[in-house]
Image 1 (cartoon, rainbow, N blue to C red):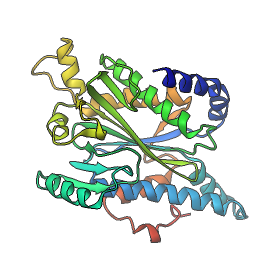
Image 2 (cartoon, rainbow, N blue to C red):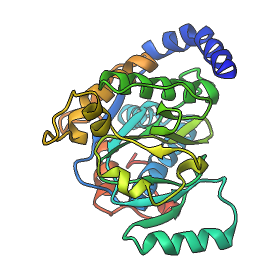
Image 3 (cartoon, helix red, strand yellow):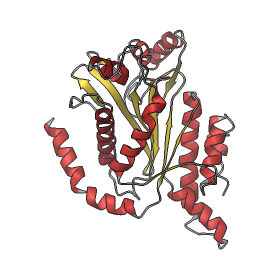
Length: 303
């Protein structure tokens, strides 16, 4: 707890500068994807957005004279995106999982249960994503936001803690990254990857009870003495949700968006057909529908 307190104090000390920088930036554009997304399709979508942003930044080093072209490049380069979604069932192994033989054996076992198994570039160890869980992919330019990687993660963790509390879920502080409701129950996870100061991946938060049966199949995040919990189960323990009263991921999205914006000091703008973010909207639609090319052929969001 002492180390966590020091880290949060250091992040708080630089928060004023970061929020001042944030106030002058574009809104974070967010979208909730209504259909469950296969993990690898979501991964390609994230990678494509980040590659497009980096390509746009490079193009702006020698900006075009055409005003519309330049405006489009600036829009792509400067727009942070928060994708909220649910995945089809998948177990993912993070960068800390390195034994090829164990990965192959574990993958075979978990695929036999009806889930995908993917070795991801995010930090951390094996975890689960699937229906009933709110996943957030936060694609943010940390340099422009004046956030260190450590402070960015600290903000994500505090956002998830606030999110849990807003849903009447107790939070138990531990040294482990993520959100716990007791020393032995975990409800939220964080795993990120940074590419040239732009973040990929993000967080997951267990909302519906159906997540527990899948988590019970693994030692989640390498914590042998920790089991998963979810908002439905915790609310029922507290008598705040009836036994036959369902809670759905979609019900929690508005509060997640609100609290995310508050934590980073950013305005949040939902992606809409009539807005200016045509490049991002096109890329997200193509990603969801499986039309994105391989990363070697990713266009710069059409600009």
